[in-house]
Length: 506
Ligand SMILES: Cc1ncc(C[n+]2csc(CCOP(=O)(O)OP(=O)(O)O)c2C)c(N)n1
Ligand SMILES: [Mg+2]
Image 1 (cartoon, helix red, strand yellow):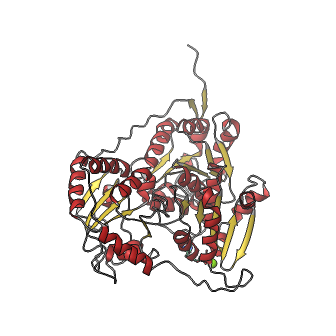
Image 2 (tube, rainbow, N blue to C red):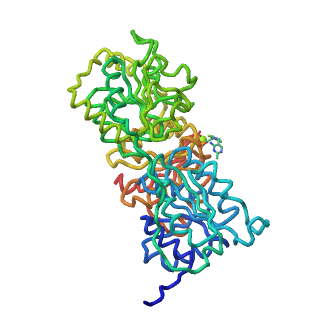
Image 3 (cartoon, rainbow, N blue to C red):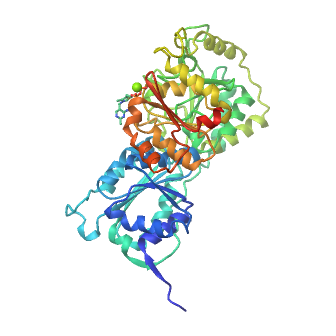
């Protein structure tokens, strides 16, 4: 038998990534990662992986997030050691808080130099371990295949999130025989009492007259969009979304109460917590929280939140059980699996709702507390055009195209969440948990790279835009994407990057 060919660790890495379905890598080169970039150049095409190089590593990380958030696949970032890796830590941490599958691969100095303060050496796998699901330092080429398979699995399964693989330079140079990666990581248990808990939650729902669904990013992560609509339409239960859940239920649906929390609609907050109108001072009596985490921007004073409601909390992450708010029942489940079973039970028992009084009240709240802004501004050439108006107009003009929208962080972000009523999942890309300014533009670039046919809009703030505005320059100057940033307009306090707009508005 002929001896099998030995190839470099860097080539093995590229082939293992390809095995995992990776087709795009965002990154910036450097000394410790040279072999990997070289391998990408030599065999990337053959294994179906393209490199999109960005101006800076945070841009690469946010672009990879745009890719991941808009497709549900793992976004991959490639950096060099030291400052390359640390520059990627903001998007890495951002992905941790928002549960986005991201894989950071960084080059590291050679094993022999580790711990000696070598040029561009930083203990980045230690540094990333608290803000990743898993962080590896690879110094042995034979560990590469299984690590890549395992990392890709961990990033996407259970509660999604970022994984970091730091690879020493000698590992990428060392030659050995290629092998496929094996994922030895145990699958998460699905709770064997799911059916039992579905029954308990259903019995509770039957007693409720004022129910509400509080839907988070878990709906999008688990592709439970159709099941959530089905539940709300079967039962007429109103739905409020977190910012991560926007698009997980159609924003323009008649059962949507809009976003919840500090920046949400008065209607959804009053509906959960009690309101000054009518007979509903107490608010909801039943809250079905799905794939949401009761974070402080949603709850305010957490002991006052939904205080008269029975709370059923469905989440895939056991750490969420009682972390911020103790529920009456916690269901450890993927959102889609739970909803499929719950909807089946509702149909099986021919459930009939009794929410007429509740809806009369909610309609009153909607009518009395609409989102509003000053509309008596002079004319389009005046200096007083409210940003909300601009966002609403862009929404009206583009909604039929189902655009993907990215945002920066700040006031414009909240107005975008309120007025750009996305109707589909994976269309509203925003840095929610970490609130990272500089997210919008590179995320839009990544989303456009993943969805070349789609209209992608970055609704950005002026200051957020300039945190990664160099990515725009890089892309335009290299002529890589002609459809991005077709026009930049400064309007009042908002910077709008309207991609492809001329084509769409013709
Ligand atoms: C990396 C980072 N630095 C600082 C902040 C704090 N911060 C939050 S919003 C904001 C201003 C945002 O300005 P702009 O992007 O113009 O948005 P606007 O509020 O004007 O809509 C700042 C500095 C942050 N969220 N992220
Ligand atoms: Mg501003």
